[in-house]
Image (cartoon, rainbow, N blue to C red; front, top):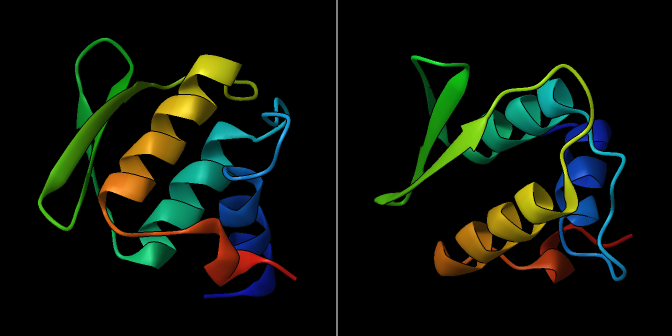
Length: 87
């Protein structure tokens, strides 16, 4: 996992919630973490990590606050913490 991926993953855990996480950057960082991405109909992407699944709506801009909060909760449910990507 490169520095940029670690920076993006850390951004999911910062307070206040980050609103400038690019969707493609998020996809790449989640893949580097070991997640599997599966394109679904209607610009949706299913993300699977450690047996947990989340479905995100792919947009061409930054993730919304709700999306970031949803991914944070998903990562925490998978045992991933922000401390692992700090610094």
